[in-house]
Image 1 (cartoon, rainbow, N blue to C red):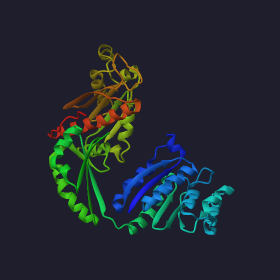
Image 2: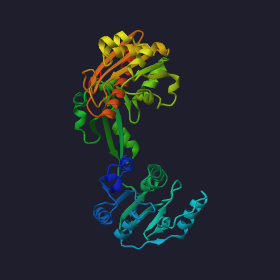
Image 3: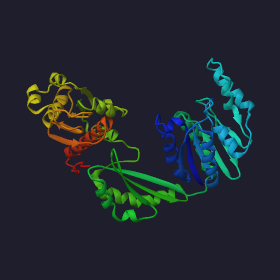
Image 4: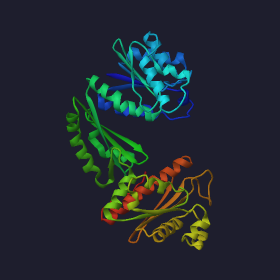
Length: 419
C-alpha cells in the first residue's frame, strides 16, 4: 500500500506551529507494512488543496490528512475531499446528535457553524473523536482510501491509536518493517560510519548512521512478511553493533541520556547536585524529567549572577583571578554544589550562551566540571548556534560527561565525547 501525508493549515506555512503530526504518522506506517512516498504541507486554500488531493489520488492508495476539520470557514478538508471524490455533503443526523450532546454536557451553546462537523459524503464514514468536536472521515472510492484526522495532536493520537491504525493493519498486505536504533557517544559520526564497515552494504537489513543531539545513532531496519521474521534478520546485526561499540553504546530506541544516567546513579547508590550559570537551570529540569529522579538528584542551584556564585561557596578571589567564564570557576561550582547540597557528585556549568561575548570569550564557550571526591572531569567546549541551541548542547554534553565519570568509577574506560 502506497501512502502520502497531507498536513493542512496556513499556520504551518507561516512557521507558527511545527508539523509534529506528519512525523508521528510517518514513524508508525512501517510497522503497518505501508510505504510512505510523499508528504505535503498546504495552506487553507481550496484550489491548492484540490490540486494536491487530485495528484495524490492518481498515484497513491492511501491519503492521510491532518487538520482542517474545525468549524470555521477556513477549515476546508471536508469540502476538498467531497470535491476530489465528486460527491455532495449532507448533515448526518447521528453526528448532529452527538455534537449537540457534546456541547450540552458542558453546559455550552453550540454555534451553528459547528454543524459542518456533522457533514458526511456517501463514500465516507465518521471516525469517533471522544476528546474533541471534530470527528474524522474515512472515505473509500475507486480503490483509494482517504483518512482525514483532526490537527490537535492529542485528538490525532487518540484517533490514530484506537481507530485508524487497527483498521489499516487489517488492510495492509505489504511486508512489515521493523527497526532498532542504537545510540553511541564518544565517537564521531565519520568514525561510527567506518566502524559499521560492511554492515552498511546490506540491502536487508539496512544500516544508517545519523548525527543527533544525544550522540550518533545507528538505525537498522529489516523488512519481512511478519514481525518475527524481520526481528530474526535484525538479531545478528544487533549483536555485531553491540560488540563493535561496546561501552560507547549507551542506549537504544526511545531511551534518553537523562534516564540512562539516572539508572547508572541508582544502580550505584550515588546522588547528584548541580550549580548552573549559563544554562539557567535547564540541566536540573532535564534531570527531573525522569520519574523517580528524586532518589538520586539532591537539588540544583542557578547562580546566574556572580555574587550569587560567591554566596554559594565559590571563592570571589578565584573569580577575580580567572573570570567567571573559566575552567577554574566551573570546578569550584561543581565542588560547591557537591558539598553544599550533600551529594556524591557535583556539576558546575559556566559559559556564554549569547547573544554577545563575555570576558573576551566568544558566544558558545562553555566550561563544565563533574566532580566526585575521587575523580573529576572537566570539559571545555565551543558550540555554534543560537542561545537555545547552545544551552541544549551544553546539557547533552554534561550528561555525557556524568556517564563517563560513573563508568570510570567502576574501572570501565570509554572514549571521550569529541563531537
